[in-house]
Image (cartoon, rainbow, N blue to C red; front, side, top):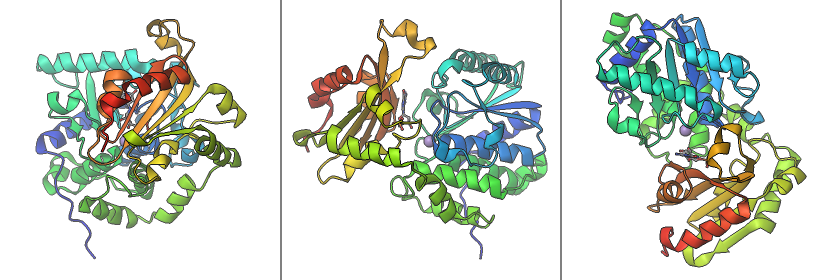
Length: 386
Ligand code: 5GP
Ligand code: MN
């Protein structure tokens, strides 16, 4: 059986650019966004496996903040440097790498305390690009594989930035596939890397988590050709599902019950649900990073609820204190919607964030009650009544 009908989505310009970045680099740092989810960690570790299979030896994966336990089994995860645990190693790897690869990330400010260093890299990249220097000149090489709406999409056609792609992992797959399976690229560049089972496991995890196990953003037929190719490497997709989605602690299940029973407010006129969680409540349920993942999607299962907002309190990290106007805590906010009802505009205009039309995020300096008040105040402006 031949499953290999994958169109050449990555353009020749992008393919050539990525091939040159990778060929020219000795040391490579791969970084993804703060609070990494399955697609962030999956896409960045898949990139690691691909580069190792090409014979690259100096490859460092960096995450700005911790990742949830349900991802801690991914192949290669032990090699990941987490900034908060090892700031010096993370900083030096990011600063000194010949090439920085960003997966599931195109905004240098979405890497918590590493933002200043990544911003410098983006600036050097922009400058060397303008001056038509070699892109690989002194610490300016940058390769982006991302699926968020960002200025990279419009400004840098050589970068792999596709907001229509359901996951960054799919883009990493496409790059690896086109580099190794496109006859002329393979021969010109010697890209004979293999798509290994570990690579496929990481890609599948990212595709699965960013589509809610293929239940949204999941109507593109080629997505299933990619899954078919991944399966031929020997991965067990059912086991991957089990490891990611059936790994809850009892406390997590109880926390979800508490949110839905005690904390969910419905605004039927605006088809909206709002859940807030303060620090005391999170402490009560011993909530860990990742335990709140997915709560925001649940109210969308209610008939006639099309918008869901989830707010949780967080400490203000040191690098944000100057911006916080003296606030002691911040609310981290997730927005979800269904159909033709954008939430990214609200996230951007009111809550210092952004994202996709139906899945966005933002924040508010202050406690969750004040963040909720702010939201209720602007709800009539941003939520449609039908
Ligand atoms: P989540 O609610 O899962 O944290 O985030 C959903 C999506 O919203 C992310 O994939 C990302 O596109 C976007 N997002 C979340 N937080 C932020 C933020 O602080 N700034 C921006 N620009 N986008 C965010
Ligand atoms: Mn993603």
